[in-house]
Length: 603
Image (cartoon, rainbow, N blue to C red; front, side, top):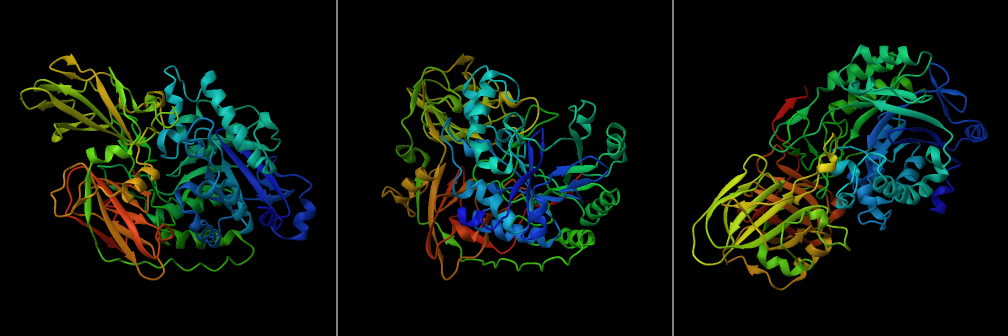
């Protein structure tokens, strides 16, 4: 870090936005800028922002470091700068940086300082949105799930259990960015801003704080509102939504490039600053996708891809939006824009043939010790992960039954459960299907419910209710079931690697049982290249490459491919493990282009 920092003359904050933004100033390696750096940062004392006393327009774009493989950070940022964007915006996901209470991770993929420093070296300013709540279509809006172990927790309030946890996190986060500035209570002296969509305009602002707005379709009311409440202040669209997110079971959302660029052009003609959310969306790797539910109590989870129909695609490809946007932004630079970087090469690998398999029940020996409990326990309150509970993945609940009949979830399944009797599949319980018929039988039989956390809501008034697994009683023939054995299946890399290395797999010649884990080897000759995984003969599950969780697949779509970045592949053999819930044709296929599903225009 010392060598890298020595390349940059000075870091200073440009501004902080109350809902969670910090803007950092990075001087380019120019002596005149270095001389001025002792004066002042970003200011909003007139109709234009000023930086070091000179007029400054923020031409921003969002790229989240946690959604892009670290090896590709530089590639994506160079493409951003070549488009004419001068300011990088990123969130900070608390739930990744503090996965267990008091255990912090700012290394490797989560090395925030390295990301900020890289942006500086490449000549970009940075807006940092530190949270603690970030929304972002990210699980629980970036808040760690262990907060929900407190039955009285009230997230995003002054509830002491919440604010004390925030303080503890900020005690770790803020010193890492303190050279670039900090929060108001911790010494920030620079510009403060808030950011709201139209629903938030009538809720007021904060005295002395610059208000900015968010939208996608151009609304004259937005600028009129800003002019009315803060005349002779700079206008900014803090989130201009370049596309939209996708939900399982829906279509792939697109927003026409010509429409997007026309609105960007108009925003800039209004002498406003802008930040495109997103410039490059990336991927919801692992189980970190959020979920959406505004008008219904039945949330829908986000898909694995966070392509967002942004100017730079999920895999870093240029789009029509990028080309048109670059043409517009070039008019706001006195110097010629940098040349556009070349694209990453792709490869369509030979199909991987599944060589062995292991049933869900055979895999339990590689999990933490199960919990015996009279009543169901939600995953966050399980005594796993050093008593921080289970954050993501699946949880298996098993109990003994003595008859068949009607199983009623009492709407206590969060979010989706596969139901088995003596390991035979009998049905699904979710928000719509609350009942399942169990077959008659004699003697004791084992009832199993494999409950998936499909992703917590990331927005709205129900954040406090995002506990997962079984969150209350389930009944058989109107009688609550008791005496459970509960297994945590969060499928972390250690578990997947233990699974891969074990000698207890079954031969492909033995009939597999579902759910199960399926193992194959992907051979990469030469330098690894980006590719996309296709699973047309599979139903629903999760894909792991060399222990790395690529995310969920689900045949219902819209997404039909999973992005596999080259940096996560090795020369030679690569371990491929697929957790599959219901069916497989025994082949993992590859493609050179993504298939994000049938499209629909953003409304």
